[in-house]
Amino acid sequence: MSRRVARRAGSSARPAVAAVVAVIATAAVDMTIARATAAAVAATAVARARCTAPFVRLAAKILQVHEVPAGATVGYGAIFKVQRASRIATIACGYADGFLRALSVATGASGPVGYIGDYPVPIVGRVSMDNITVDVTDVPEELTRRGGWVEVMGERVTVDDLTDRAGTIGYELLSRLGPRVHRVYEGV
Image (tube, rainbow, N blue to C red):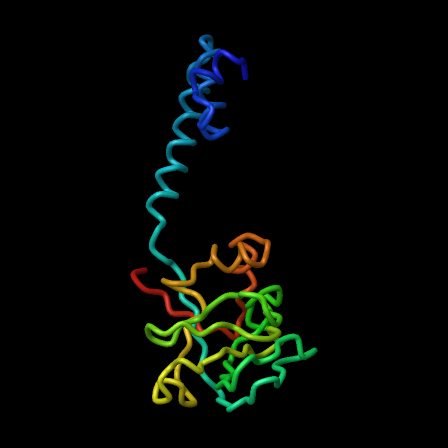
């Protein structure tokens, strides 16, 4: 792209938009290609702007809740040490279901958060094959009984939130959601 075109596009312009400006400025012979490129970039930008609502929700049942004393460790490899007396729930979701193992949380690290109603429940310890552990200490006990639900992906915790933490892309997480995950298609 020429410097003249880059200045015209503005230094804060996205590279794809600046490239379209460059194509339009230099492709006087074949404007069909330039128009098609500009249309594709514009359509992509519009699609991204419209996809603000979550399109997938993943919730897992609470299997058990344990009272854990301060100093106890949670999960394989004891990577998470409880800092205060806590209630830790084990939920039925793990890497065999497609939840990324890279979302495991060690002591002192902040990790992804699930939700029980409006209450955030941080993931603690290692994501194992079939289970994740979450800290439900600050959630009313009546909401944390066996069989209750924890939303681990959805309106408050998006696919992009999780994959940004895991250092990957949304397609990887979505394609890993395995056959054990019950699917409900709405509005189809």
